[in-house]
Image (cartoon, rainbow, N blue to C red):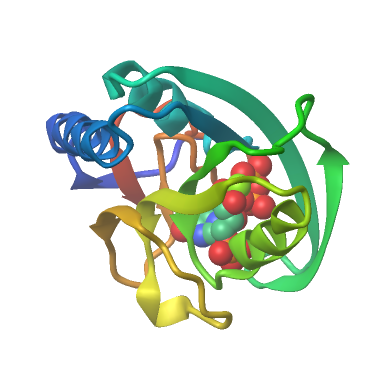
Length: 172
Ligand SMILES: O=P(O)(O)OC[C@H]1O[C@H](OP(=O)(O)OP(=O)(O)O)[C@H](O)[C@@H]1O
Ligand code: HPA
Ligand SMILES: [Mg+2]
């Protein structure tokens, strides 16, 4: 059975936005190197496309965390299920996410990754749902602010499906 999906942000709009964020990061980090951290699984499509648009030297690492709670609201209890491979010591870190919703995931990550002595940590998200925020997070790069609707595509899933859609949609 397939669900009906209404397009919220088109593929062209997503592509243009990622190019814009890539250009901005390249300017902001001119003369430096950036270390991108992908938060699996949702962040993977965005990070790969973004990395291609950054013109300063890029290294990448991946981590996976899980939160406990019911399907629509995470409890905020988070644990690492796959840690980074590399040290963050002295690195200019950018955490790349598909979406910030309650803010719990990124707040937790920033707290634990700060302790690993990076030179800096900045946050970059394709989507932001500010109405849903429970924990404040300081995000430097935001693709699109969206209303409080459950979205899929570009890494975002509904019951593990639709991550591969090249646009952002709302399941009807
Ligand atoms: O701001 P928050 O309320 O913490 O929500 C945002 C997080 O939730 C989703 O990940 P999820 O934990 O569903 O895992 P996934 O990336 O593997 O889909 C999304 O990819 C973000 O990582
Ligand atoms: O709107 C959403 N869609 C998919 N996954 C999510 N995780 C937090 N918010 C969302
Ligand atoms: Mg995620």
